[in-house]
Length: 355
Image 1: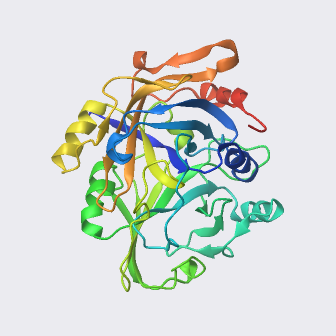
Image 2: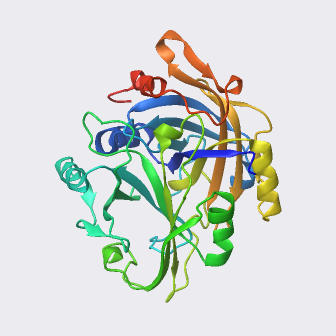
């Protein structure tokens, strides 16, 4: 029996060239307006993924109380952020699309029209019948709104929630499945189809032929934040009729784009053993507890075969109401027991209108 738990996708790392401008855009367009931490510091532990050098950075974690994962908004401050060296297309290796959940796809679409988001597609259906559409942000990252009824809380202004998963380009499907199925627990195949897809046609490179696998999990996620983070899905795509490029080829972690996908976990030692046994030892390990000002915990990374960086974070302290000094020490709680919903909802006191 597993001695660790995965509570869900905690956040998607989003490297940006313009910290304040990007966060304000994500507040207005995606409702990422609850601040968990906001800190300027030096990333000293990511050396395997930053050309062996500590990197000055400005990072913040923001969440949408509609439910789902948040964004870790991340900007290099000690060097000029390096944009992609080529036009990235669907099927290129790594995280290509971040999925966002919404209760009503029609309301989400109308809102994105209202705030003048660059919309890439009409509302279409995935091969399993789920409604979705694609948009592009101010930095040319692509996001997918997916209709999903299991949201945490009704949002006030933006009719959508947080991170629901990702579309990831892979080179060898079977090798990548070891990470996403056997380690991350996406044990249910929603579909496994090889063809051209009408709902991909409006994406760059989307008219090619792909093998496309939708991965879901049969068991509900457990852990302190699982009610907020909810379920998730990973969609792996392998382009058949061209040679894909690595999305981060010639660049380092933290440069603009989707820099990692992070899972909230409990039981880091057991996860370390599982990853090593599957051939994916930790590339980064904070060893005990990191401190990011308002939040603290233990983080580690593995790298999937296609190059995707996957972070595991075991939270030790989180702010509930920072203004009055209310923090929760998670090391004193049952790791499998969800926090009460009223405590999770209380984090909305940290909502901001602009940076």
